[in-house]
Every structure is written in C-alpha cells, then in structure tokens.
Image (cartoon, rainbow, N blue to C red):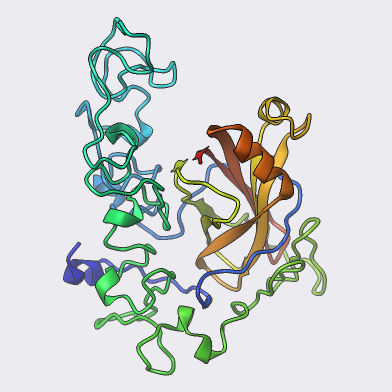
Amino acid sequence: MPLARTLLTLLLLSLPAVAGGVLPAGSGPLALEVAGAHPEPGDVDGDNVKDEVDNCPTTPNGAQVDSDRDGQGDACDADDDNDGVPDARPDNCRLVANPAQENADGDAYGDACPPVDTDGDRVIDPDDNCPFAVNADQRDLDGDDRGDACDDDLDGDKFDNGFDNCPTVYNPTTDTAPPFRQPDADKNGKGTACDPDEGLATAPAGGTRSGGATGTGGGTGSGGATRTGAAPTKDTRKPTVSLTVARRHAGVAVGTPFVVPVGCSEACSLQARLVIDARTAKRLRVGARPAVLAKASWALSGSGRTYVILDWQRRARTALKRSRSLSARVWVVADDLAGNTTTVSRKVTLRR
C-alpha cells in the first residue's frame, strides 16, 4: 500500500507504549465465547480493508481472496468453491468445484485439484498466507491474514515497513491532522513504542510484567484477574475486544514465541491462553481435561492494541512432539477498571 494512502487512512488511536513488544505473565480461568470487535472505526476486523469494501468485514482477510467470486471472501465462506460440499466436511478440493469428491488415489486431495505449491515452501497455495513468497512458518505478526513475508505493514499500525519507526511494534499516530507522525519523544528516529531509551523497556504505562501484570485498575495475572483500590463505578458497559491472531501457524515450537495481537476499547487487563480440548489432551496423553499449552497476561492503560506473548507450559512440548498438526483455541479475557468483563476466542491450527 503506498505511504500516502496509508497516511491518509490512518485511524486515530492511543496505545500505551510498549518497548520491543509485550512481556508475558500468568492468566486465570476462561469461559464464555463472545464475538470480538476491532477498536478501529471503519475496520471491524483490523485487516486494513475498510468495512464497506471488505468481503469478510468481521474476519481478518487482508488479501480479500474470493475463489468462487460470490462476494464472500474465502476466510468467511463456508463453501469456498461453491460446489455444495462445505469446506468443513471437509471438501477434498476446497477451491475447485468437485461435488462428487472423486479421489482415485485416496490421498487428501480430490482428482480435480492435485496439490499446488507455487512458492515451494511446502505449504500448498490454498493454505498459504503468502502463496508467492517462501514462508514455511506462515508467521503473521498482526494477524491480518497476510504473512509477514509479503506484508507491507508487519505490525498493522498503518505505516508501511520502510517508513515505520517501529516496524515490528504497533506504534500508531496520535496526530489529529496532517502530517501524521508516529510517536518519538526523544526524536532519535526510533519510535516510542520500541525505544528503551525513552524508559519504556520494562512495561507500558499501567502494566507490569510476569506474575502480576497489573493495569491501572489493579488487574493482576497469574491465578485470575482481581481488582483492588477504588470502589466500583456505575459503568456497566463491557469493553470491546479484538482478537486478530492468525488462523494457521506453521513451524510452531516451544522455543518460538506465540504472539497474540489484542485490542481493547478502553483501559483493561488482558489474560490470554492457548488451550486444547479434553479429547485432544487425552489423545496426546497430556491430561483428561482441557489443557493449557501457553498463557500470559498484559495490560493497556487506554484504548488501543498490543501484542501478548504467551509463555509455553511444560505439557506443550509433549503435545507438539506427539502431533504434527493439532487444533487449539486462543482465549482472551479483558477486564476494565469498573470490573466489566469481555471474553473472546478464536480457533487456530498449530503445525510443527
């Protein structure tokens, strides 16, 4: 996307500064699934495509792929090739119409669609978030469904990488009129969100790290959010929360951070977990109940977005070793300063 267009379409948000990313902590129990919304007006799913022209307005799909040209993007279309066989069945040719599902050799692909891997990264094109750029790990930092290998804006702050003073850390403008500039308090060319010299290396305003990440309202991680201090206010409105984590993750390993992009409409404490269900946990022999593979918490001192980097738990190594691919769910719980809670989740696939 050209820089001029990027700057003209900037949405004015305020994000507490985060140096070099966020720092992890523990989390508490998770439950009810609630639909999430992106805090940026006009782009509900945060994929940098305006709602009025987005073919999946509530599902991140920056590439806007619509294989059957029915006006509904593949990311939110239950039948991508419109052959009457739902993708979830699963359809053995998800992007090529083959209602009879012929499969003479009995492999995972129908006769109508022998697997194609244009860029040779061992991820077939229908599942590749950069089909023309080699990226076997399918990493997608900002969760916009464009892989980092082909994304002009890695952190989703609407500044192209070549002009971004924090290319991999969300550092949006706070200017209300042109020229739109990114925060850089000491004017050294390194943005406030990723400059340790600005005194932000340990935590953003209103947040402290690991084992007790607290927001301005006193939310704590590790064992569940608790709030102390000021008496409850009359505010009963739940915070609006966005969760734009990528749906597919390749090259997953315990030694590699699992990053969860999260947004909140107001100051809130955030708790995130990566969980496998009881059936999967039992199959992998890591327990008889839903198992937490990774977890962390963080806090925002105001409306904005951040990245929560999850800590892998001991059982994760066993689970990933025993399965080349597994389904899991990312859960995020957000508590605002008045004690209102919103919970969002998203199903993800992990591949090592």
